[in-house]
Image (tube, rainbow, N blue to C red; front, side):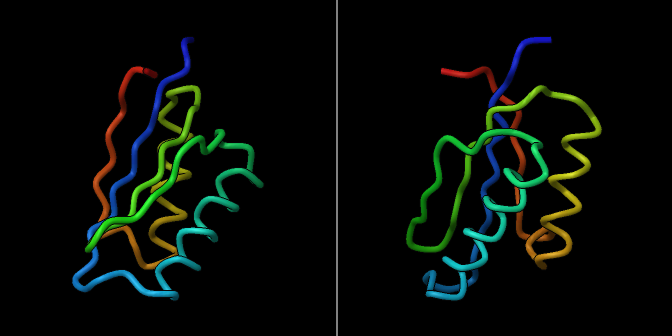
Length: 86
């Protein structure tokens, strides 16, 4: 199965702050520690944060990422896109 890019965009209801940055670090570290995929890009804008993960696009891996988002309190404000790698 060919790897894909899983893009997670998390909307914030305010300009991002230090706590949001720490949450993003925790999200990235958890994805990589659990060997779900490789985070190859991460960033923040005025009212959102985003990560891009190269992974094998299985249902299980997507469920694991959703579970991590849920545990960090980010699931409801997240959008997840599965895309071809550039």
